[in-house]
Length: 184
Image 1 (cartoon, helix red, strand yellow):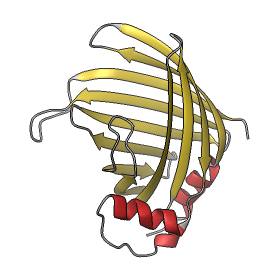
Image 2 (cartoon, helix red, strand yellow):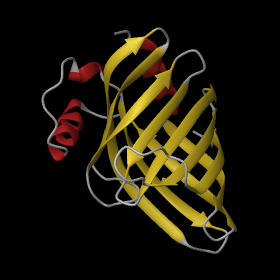
Image 3 (cartoon, rainbow, N blue to C red):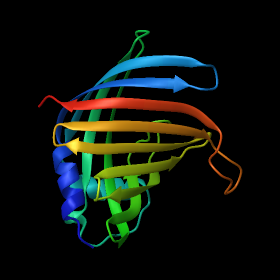
């Protein structure tokens, strides 16, 4: 499996980002705007091992080469609400077909629920889009980061009401869009 392109993607993500987002809450017809300051740092092999342990995930090959990051952010909404969080994430590729790489996305702390969580990812090196799907207790979050260039990303977030069993994701509850610019 060739990790060069996905590692380039994550290398570009390292740094300080200024983010403007708009969220559309479809359950109660509300629109919210927010500003987020993201600080993204690289991840050490020790932290990678800790993320694996936090998620009771087995040993993986080539751990030092796997992409991941440490993230701290502060968000302020247009209503004055503030949210801060720190987390560590690791991406464990499982397979690659052509330009598409898929695998597991592990975090020591989830966004929606304060606990370690294993999600799935799909990375398309043809357009440098990372798509992450996380099944939370009540919703399934589908989050996309499109790397336009090393200093600009476009973010798209879809939250669906979690279906019973393996039902389709068709009850959209939230849509978010963001422009993310690196400010170093």
